[in-house]
Image 1 (cartoon, rainbow over the protein chains, first blue to last red):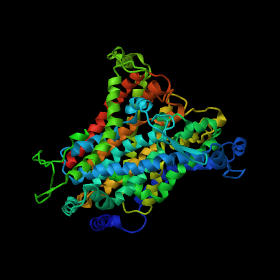
Image 2: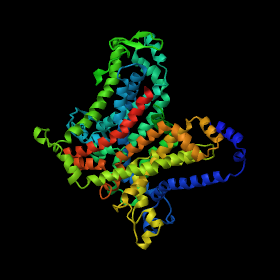
Image 3: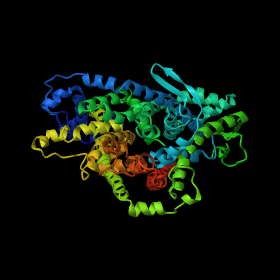
Length: 316
Length: 319
């Protein structure tokens, strides 16, 4: 596209295309470099603060050169004193099954609604899409009561080292449980994933499904062996995006979990603030440690993440 | 809901087991297949209805009661519109929170979203370094709002924050309490929220710009239109579907605003928001379930605007 644009630019206005330094371009770069600096600075500052010993900042103030040297001591303190590894595991226990189940459920709905002509296809998709657009706070009051009043069986727990993961529940309720947080993420995100995946599946020819049916394949087989493999790029993008969404969530675990030790890392960060993060340098180190997994996603899976965001908006 | 989904040809509801092909022939889906398909839609739909739409309906129902969460709701709990009356006239935090949500929306709509679109337009060209700039503006989008809040506290904090130190306000003793002063703290956290929102809008808009037919721009160029004119007269109108998505995202983000305000001071002293009043009234502090639900209903009613806009767009493009 830009090749064609560049070509026509040359033919239509030869003076503009003249090689060499163009003042417009220089100004544009200058503007973008300044804005990039503004954008990166808060993060740079957080990293810088996190690397400075508190004694150094007390002595010289926050706005000073690192006379006392930089070190990872703050990270070490946060990591061990606040038991940070524990909270990462809490997040994984919730996020990994939630992402997988969300993709399974959403791809089933998207498959059934795009590959077959049902009477209520559109209504179904709208129920899911609209549900995902609601602010979570609209449903939180009754949801909190539902969580407090839903009995679940206690089936023991899986204990690994000092971690104990109850099967279903350890207080007979849905409230204050990993499974409860997992469940609301699955339901909430299924709305979004259904919307995105059904847009993607619409581009798959229905004839593939039709001929498979003629050949005698069961719908489950068609879904799993034919349609899902065709959706691999969309599924990869959604998995990346959903994992980041769930990792970054603060609200559900804040309200639907009471025990601080069970909270996933993003929700736990706020509690740790007063208890362990007693100065700005430790706060910075804590925030950076929580930010590391999303930043890894940013570095290695940026394409998938962006694809997930734009699939949800530019199609359909 | 789940049972109402029966497979059918559009023209004859009785022909349940038929699947229409393009050529107009029909193939029989087995009974087993039909049941499986019903479950594939039914189970997720049941969960969605139970945990999203049922609570939504319950919020509306509970908003007419004074239920405190103890025991079950009885006829005596019904108090008509009293929650709403109190909310609009007696409860001093409602209108400030409402106004803060409006300011949030206005800020995003008039500052952050246009800036994101501007970045997208600037970066949508053949130029060295666009990938780098794009990555920089996109970086905050992957971060949690909690982390964003923490990062900006390091900028805004009165004596230890970067801004007051950099402008010499700590030395001169004229501290500005960016997050504590109720007259300015909303704008401070809006800067933090925008840091993330701008990149989000940019990425989505950029994807849209890439799909604009390049011949349109060339034609405008041939006609002698400059870049600004070309954008407003040619590109922006053909981007209408994306513009709607951006508008909906902006509105929904403003209504969902919760995390940063909660991190800073639990949504008090200048940072009241509707979302926070809901949780504070019915979960954290008091058990005013009915009253909290009434605030939730207001938030629901406002949210229906962007949701309906979005759904009608989806309807239009699918039919």
